[in-house]
Every structure is written in structure tokens, then in C-alpha cells.
Length: 113
Image 1: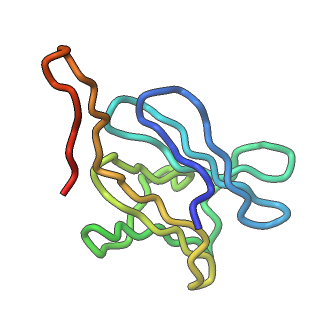
Image 2: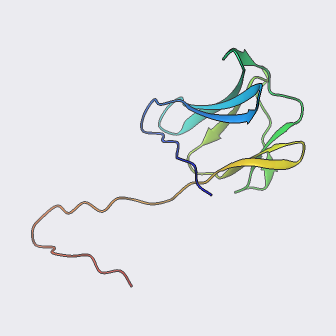
């Protein structure tokens, strides 16, 4: 079930409730990367909880956080799943799509097969 989207084209910070005391936040850093980090119920940033794993499902590898251990880096070209105690909480799926914008009146319609 889809519950929204995150864009690398704007600065909106998305928040996903993990449990009653923890939220995950996804924040764009540049056109290619974002940070996934965690906050407590008072919206203060916290270290990555010990029972959380972020898996890059494109490469089938667990993400290793930087030495600060308070965030994960995500890129637009990979898919990810966040696990808590081995259970999937949410997925980040690259939609790999483009909008079709007509440039001239010569093209009258787009036919899908």
C-alpha cells in the first residue's frame, strides 16, 4: 500500500512513524542523495536505533551508516527497505518514470501499447 512519496526535487522533509516514540525522517541533501534519520517523540534527533536495518534492495546489501551513526544515506537510483526487529516497516521505491510534456502541436496524442 502506497502512503505518499519523497522527491529529490524539493526540500520537503517526510516523516514516517516507526513506533510511538520514534519517527524516521527523509531529507533531501542534493539532487542525488538524501538522509534518512531518526527523531524521538519530542522531535529531537537520535542515533539509529539498534534494532533498525536499512537494506538497499537494488544491491541486496545492508546499508552501513557513516561513523556518526545517526543517519543513513539514500540515493535516487536505488530501492530500500527499512526493517525493525527483522520486520519490514516501509519501502522506498524508485519509480523510474518521466512525465511526457508535448513540445509542439504536431503531436496530437500518445499511444500506449
